[in-house]
Length: 333
Image 1 (spheres, helix red, strand yellow):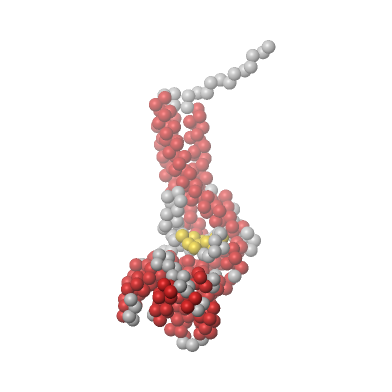
Image 2 (cartoon, one colour; image 1 turned 60 degrees about the vertical axis):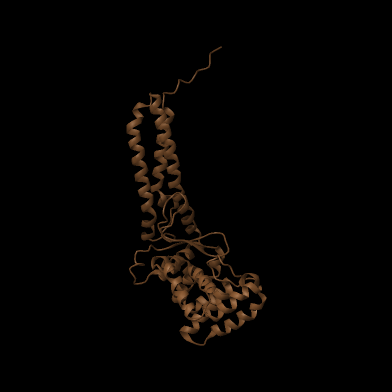
């Protein structure tokens, strides 16, 4: 019987050399985002958005390749030596973790940008980018360097955002504001004021209003006789009142009309008061929009909207502890 042929023994370090080449290929993926998502002209994002996204990917690729090549030059010729193999094995393990972090950022934008291929939604998402950017495109130096936001679809009840510069998974900073909205928002185009609200969060941060507004509002409430509890609550709520006012400044009465539908929930939710949630109670949030309209234009359709709102949400339906906040807060709007 002919003996079975045995494979020749692998050279020491052969597997490590293969892992080195695999790591190099993975790292080079970071510069392939455009080719991966392959957006056509009708679905593509703007050159400025591409620059914002590709810059951190290029930086990560350059850093990781430099680390890998320096280690390769130092260790690949010594893999016959066990201490060198151990060092190189540990190094490749660290590189694998670092590459995975960088590819998390890459994968995030593959998921977001691939939505632009959807025949209808892709076009609408580009329009949402324009709505968000138009609201931020003001002649103010703090806003002049903001990248055009990128809107995408995600699950959930309402819109939300990650501002430019905040940390993403993978320890990378978000290169441009991303705004996520449920698909139904694209079907309710009159409620796309929520996109402008999310853009407003970036404006509040860039204009340093998140730190300024609580003190300004507390001072105004104190002068109007508002007790300290209300001053503190409104100070907390300015985190969302500020972006709401940004919507009003950009969209006018459409902000007031839209918000009453966006937060038109069951009375138990609309009348609930939280001492930790930065969102004001929907009851007050909607009435504040109507008050802005009156301050700007006097009498108008918002008076009818307010009467209807108050009839749907009588404040005496709230628990006594919440009424103790809602009633005096309404008088101070």
